Amino acid sequence: DIQLTQSPSSLSASLGDRVTITCQASQDIGKSLNWFQQKPGKPPNLLIFDSSNLETGVPSRFSGRGSGSDFTFTINSLQPEDVGTYYCQHSNNLFMHTFGQGTKLEI
Amino acid sequence: QVQVVQSGAEVKKPGSSLKVSCKASGGPFRNTAVNWVRQAPGLGLEWVGGIIPVFGTANYPQKFQGRVTITADESTSTAYMELSRLRSEDTAVYYCARGTKLDHWGQGSLVTVSS
Image (cartoon, rainbow over all chains, first blue to last red; front, side, top):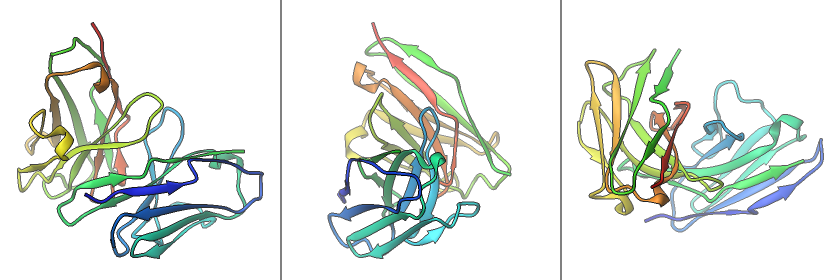
């Protein structure tokens, strides 16, 4: 089974900062990597799919890149509403899903 | 506009079974994947299993094999997740998420397992 390792597990940043989260897969997954944001008491919300594609309606300050086993997620110019927990996620060709352990972002 | 509405909160005894429903509207049902993801208090996201209604066969991770059953009723555009032999560690919010990208989520169903 594919494992996803996110880092850091938590971080604190200031408004306007650039924030980067990494996700490492235990094997080559091509570009099949998505990023979600979750706010307390709410379901996760898809931000980025297939490594670098911005989901409709998601602000352009969010971006993703990577392929193979190493991926990064970036927030440019951090806003107050960006507080939450971020998860990377992969689904294989059998539609089986794996999540990273999450990164809690505070301001 | 796609909407996903789940059944309400439940309190269950250890050893009993749970069945949560997920009704979809505003988009095709039969060929859109329905996945179940749970989140224990203060912890991360865990995939419980999924189904593509037109195929009828569900996939489950090894951890839940034999204890979870996911089904879909095309006539009512509703998917179900049944978890048996409940234990306290199954206390969690259970989410239904549609699509291979998990791009539409239900509001979550809080399940508490307690004697």
